[in-house]
Image 1 (tube, rainbow, N blue to C red):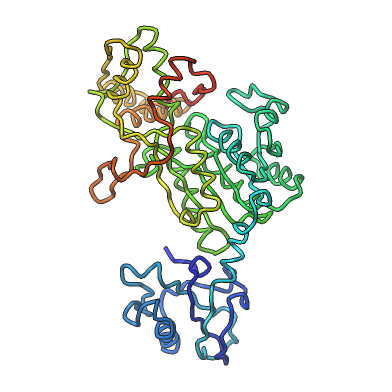
Image 2 (cartoon, rainbow, N blue to C red):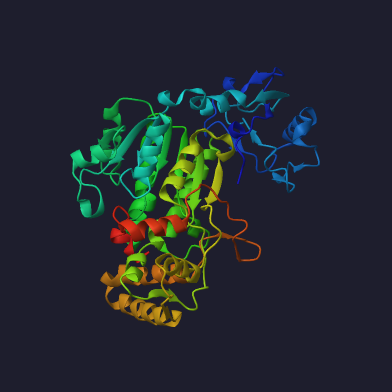
Length: 454
């Protein structure tokens, strides 16, 4: 991946015909048509220009750091040298002249200028605002004093049970606009009607059930629509709610999320946008479904011996707080941010034992062999070839199998193992406190709806 000159706070060297003056980056038009990545030097003069850039900017390394004819940097220097040349607009037939120094600070400052505003002057557009995490993000934004523009469906909530008035009440403190995020025209029109420029986009969009078509329609298409529509009204930072499980993509919603992550990173390379990609571990609500069953005397169901996987679950409030942190905290710019809660990693067995301990009862477990799921998935995969309408049913089986066996922890790419110690922790809410609340109050407000398969 090429580094971007605007993201670097570094002095750069550009070649320009017949000049040897020092310019600020703002003297140039930094669009993709006038800047090209240097894959290899086209002539000896260009090679010398690069060498001079390195020589006159010692912090970038030395002439041994880069091979100008391959455009490859030695390991460890890729983040130090953003190597772009302004060559498209040079007069035809003329050789490239002397090198000129350019600083990237002005364009970088333009990108980050909203961070110098007071929070009440920062306009934040949030899509997925009525979802499980989205509504908590809206509350956190309002609490911190941001100017919040929340996009919602006309009929929101599980099975579209809330109308406009209920949605406006739910998102109190935000300016609510109604649009279909899967329709770019609808989304643009709704945002235009608000009549303000946007500084930051936060996307909490997620497929409602993980089905094949719905995953691509929401996790990719709708999320990309929010990027396009937000940029059109000035947005320069994008906070994306992704998922830690995309690091091992075996499911359609994971592939859809990864495709958008890649496009967001490419946008950042143009220098017109920065991003924070947040990859949380398991949510509390996804682990609370069996609390009431255990309370009613039923066994706690787990796969294998209950030690196949583990997670560091995070509460909705803590996750919302972390996502809002991404607006102003510069150490979260252009980063992929895996995040878990404050607990140690817990296996399903440990979670079940915790529930029974809180109830003061002897643990009662039902252990289901993974082979049963594998058999069912095999049957569905066969049937879907004959009956394509079973496509989602087969995908739901794979989703269940994935969460039964894969840990929601950071994956070490070198060992292929999940690493609990390397998974960052954040917040104060613990799973035990959540289980205690569910035992007292039930799962009201924590309904899984179409996501029950997860």
